[in-house]
Length: 251
Image (cartoon, rainbow, N blue to C red; front, top):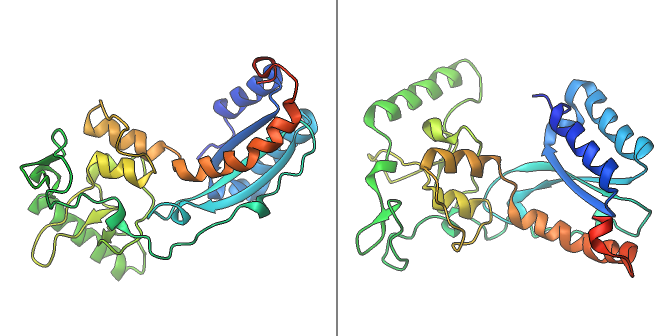
């Protein structure tokens, strides 16, 4: 992991040039502890001391909004001091949330979509079910690491589950989030539509790319409802800073 690299310094250049009233950034939870905290110290120093922004940070688990355990550090900055506080963020918790919220019902209650689902009941296509060879490999791999005392292995979900974090490598074998199909049946991968739902995109969001590209892009996406809520909290403070100004000039 190289959190401080070309991309972060590109962000700095954008902030220096446009001097926006506020910014919203995110990164993996471990950013704060990376390289014994030195990485985050560099980021904080450049944003606050060099650029003069006030910085607010909070680690937020997307499971408060969608049925996915996905902790990310959220960084909010303002060009001037405001009354913004992450203490105003109300998190619902995981109660009542589960994979049932994103899985295809397969009951005919939704319209079949492309090659994701087929037939009048919109059943998930067989192409997403793991082959015997891959399923045996994943079970063997998990057993091997369990015997060695490691926690590595596949993640099997049911409608009541909260999933692991969807990653950009999901296209490889789908092992972090496999949907149980019952005893004696091989599990299946999520469809790209289910991945979209898991990241908080509604069903109007078009998926025009291949499954491989969709898995990569959704795995790299932010959880939309998390940042919609943070943006909602930021809005009045941004408006207070830009009142009477041309927003095109202040970013």
